[in-house]
Image (cartoon, rainbow, N blue to C red):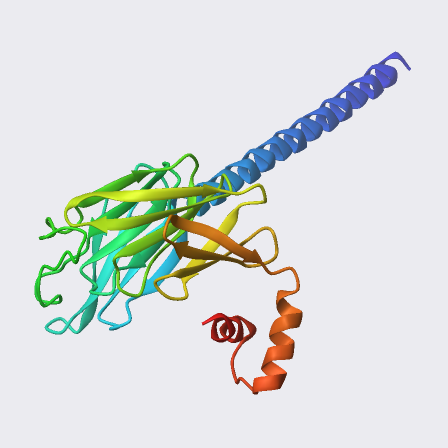
Length: 267
């Protein structure tokens, strides 16, 4: 009986040890899975913030396009006829994520906004693609590709930037609910004017013409800015914007989107 009892206790101990070992293995496996999931999440966040394409702008002549990305650079691409392939050149003057890029009408330089609190005008002149090194009214002659022509400080990171149709003005919107206008200064630092509004931030804008800019954002309605003798000012708000566009489109039979209808109406 004593031997049988001892054998029974031994088997019970072995079974208990086996169960504990299995539980430890499952626990270790669970911890490893958690670590793996956390690592994958980290990698996804890393690639999203540092390698994400945030904006792509094709120039009107369709000879070049520019890409703003989370990797703190702008890729300027052009078609190489000899290689029969699109070639990319990088502008690496930004210290943080590039949120937006806009082409000057002559395609020789660009404007960028970034989360490093800067708006930059930068040379994008590529030999053999651009006919001449034309700095417009901003600068007599552009520096080498990728060099900064001008920097404009902002009080917050900026969302979007745009040149006017002539290329002699630009405007950009920032996270502090402001919009900044800049004028070409014939080689001098651009003159600027910043309007700070009380509403939510703007996220995008464009020039309807040389005298009017339309901005949109988190207020869920567009805003019209007008240039006057004393600078830029908010002309009016469009609380009933979509209703007005609907009425106008019905009256005039515009075959456009609501936004294009609105532009036709104001200009």
